[in-house]
Amino acid sequence: MDRLIYRGMLRVIVLKSLSEQPLHGYALMNRIEESYGFKPSPGAIYPLLRRMILEGLVTVEERRVGDKVVKVYSVTDKGASYLREHASLVTLLDQLSAKLKIASDIGLLALAKNLFWLFKHINEIPSDKLNEFKPKFSELNEMISRLKRVEAWR
Image (cartoon, rainbow, N blue to C red):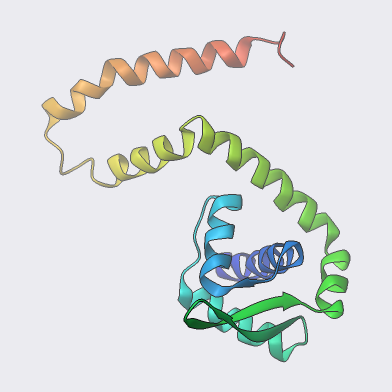
């Protein structure tokens, strides 16, 4: 189920990104990373783009960029219609994108990635090294708890 949700969201994210500007595959992956905080793999993007071309949602055109020829993808009228039909998901993804931008700007995404890594490897890390984090985690937890109690900023 998670994979189906991801694929459905990625379809809308790709269409939304291409509706803003035609892009080649690598630029599209970078745009998604900048906007949504994750970079889809070529193995996810290119098969999806091929399916979307077959469905008439996207077109592809070869263009020369310097000494290279790249495939540039654009949204069709049918693709734009698909986005309108899924406007509530587009709105939700735009809200998520805005939150991810703020989280990235303040370093929260980098912290989350490092915390995930720490959790994943927690059994391998010597306890003395883990204990070095304890006061920092306590301080951060207390700061967040205080923030949650404050109503003035709402």
